[in-house]
Length: 409
Image (cartoon, rainbow, N blue to C red; front, top):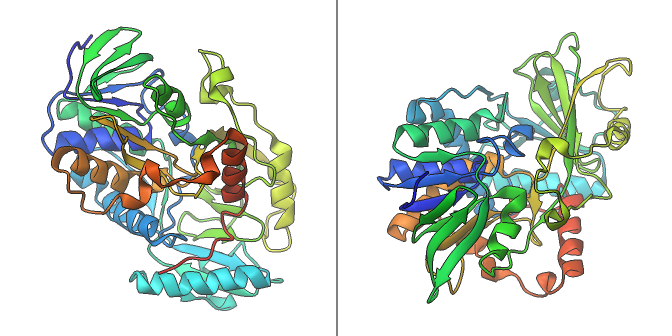
């Protein structure tokens, strides 16, 4: 057991593992990663693994763009394996409101230098052969979007690379307290003993709020169930087919090992209070509901050419955390020197985690991140987080309207 650390990172999901790696890459000694479970084993490996560089918020778009660049050179940088495919993404509008969103997305993508463009039906048929043009009004294509074949490789790769650079990984180690004296972090108490440290990063995912509460810090996030399924093999499906999203249905899909991965945003999101969960709860214990995905699949039946008889190979689900404005929370906690947070992934967190970890590590060590983090400050929230009911209502709106937000350049 380690009794002293330069930085303690709590949580080894995508945000935590990336932060730990980038701290060690910048020369920070004594990085310790503490996780109550196995390393990189909870929500991150249950993600769909899609990147989307054109986001409603330009600050998050810049994070997503940097992350794609880092994914492309991940193995070169870390020495760890990462399987990805870069077929681009096809985003589809079936209604008037979604057409306005897609047109704004095209303009925003071009302003970001991403070569996002309108796509014809014939061009779509080459990129996404399973989609037929029935009732489709407009299609946007971003050619550099990519997907991770197995998303768990990303946090696990970052954690292993951090370990190779001197970090200590402590799986199956629960945080039971965070010591604060005179407004400064002084230690982290765990189920294995006390670790003296002046810097803590709370990247505990679904448990991040509970961790922060041990230091009296209210972090306004709410875990929400998110699900997808993977079909059996479908003739003609190829790994190079584009990621597809049908906006009004809140449905996304991509190839996966000869089948189709399909998921979406539930109209009645199921939020979870982790304070009521069993101490032994893991994300693998999360109750899933296939009927939700069946309804989502039915809503795009006219556009997706998949036989109803195709079976489901796998049903996955995780607990990403939502915020009231759909942006993550990344940066220092006001009033407590040495306490930082990286949470509120808002479902798309894995795809921005390379940039989140890199910029947070820069902030911690130099005070000057390469991308500004002001937009992710915990102090930005107002009335939307004044009560638990208000927070959940705002998070629910962000989740259910995920593809309805108009991008800005």
